[in-house]
Length: 369
Image (tube, rainbow, N blue to C red):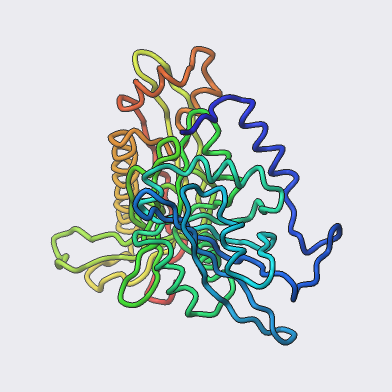
């Protein structure tokens, strides 16, 4: 149960997060070869019980580590550390944990209790990444462990935030979205494809429960709508008298800026969205000639209209699922004295959005983007 819409719970989260630290600093220093530092943790449902899996580092010679995976089950997720400690010869510590992965079956039951437990623990860093796995988290961790790369899944998320389609996120932003009124949180969604781990979009939540999954295209649209960003790409089918069935152009964001304007609260909430984009395009087919200013402008217009359609479709999906990862409710709350969460939730599926896309191509051609 979410139980966190009250301001008091939110401020507790903020206070807890501001005190986060990693136990490798001063204070009660511990000899690194006498403890086991958890790198990644996973949670699954095992029938009516909870299964917890952890990857930790065994430190050998200087600069060398060996990763090991262990797991345990319990009736509750609150006693996992004591149970895991019974399977090791050294005490388990969370000070270097960078990733927590939830199996889809666990996420459907609700993440609230685990999130609340983590934010109360000052050893948990605000940089920790969270994710949802289509398969059991324990199975995904077993695959990740074969890489023998410390924080493999966390590094995948951070690389895709920096150069790919994922919006910026970490434990702090997840808590803000979870406890804040008028917004819902989202997590990266992992699948297993052709013997490889893949980030396949985002898991969208209502309160603390997994509702639906969207792909990397929608993740890019959410990135455009929630931050002034760089990078991220979208493959657009080309339509024209000379186009062929498999003619596409790859459009990559160079810079983007989004602005919102509150229009009205009655009869239904209404918002104006302006999205300014500078993009690079790649692999333009030979039949598409952009030598004249008119042709180039027409092509820019076509790209902008396609982005607008994608934004409209994503917002419609969110409204149909009654999830608000964009934070429309929070935006209206900040602009309207008459806002309350219950009324907004009932009117959210009727929310009206007017969207304007200002798109400019700053680079085009066949070179690598």
